[in-house]
Length: 108
Length: 112
Image (tube, rainbow over all chains, first blue to last red; front, side, top):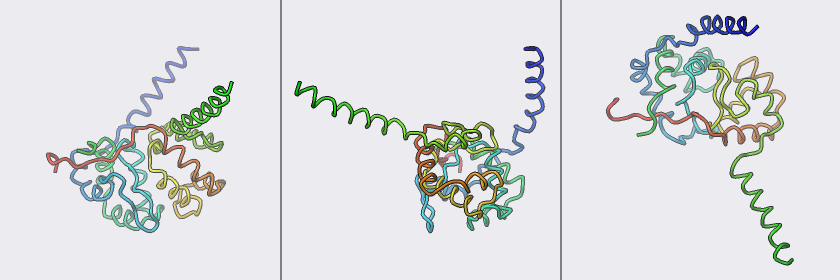
């Protein structure tokens, strides 16, 4: 029984590993993320009308950040500025930016 | 005796304070969120966002957008549709108060 479980776990790990590895390049993402930092790089920065703080992105997973950017690009999230930003990004740009932001350096 | 009478409410106040300072009590509906976002706000799968330490008014905004159907996600839309304004405030405050991995990225001079 335990052997079956271990085999299944190993198999599952093998199957999920390639998907878990993001295709993005963090070095390329660092340059492409410059615009992002105008809002997301300022601690406590607020969106105006309605007023709420722009989310912290450091420490999120690249997978989630990719999904969020693609949702903005597809118009599935309503924020106009983010839709505009995401519209200008290719899938590769999105992957690169996500990998960079997920583990970007913190505040200097 | 008088001292004890004074001490008891004082201790109760201190205990209540500690409970508030340490944690916002988990709202009842957190059990649903926890399946994906974790009871402590650390996501169970990389495709789901961490909520621990995220700004509470951002979480509130996201939940209101899901509830209104303007932020489109089948799972979150269904979940958010069951939430009242009070639920949204409580869940956001709870998750925002949890310690977690989120931070604001910075631009360092050497990296520009």
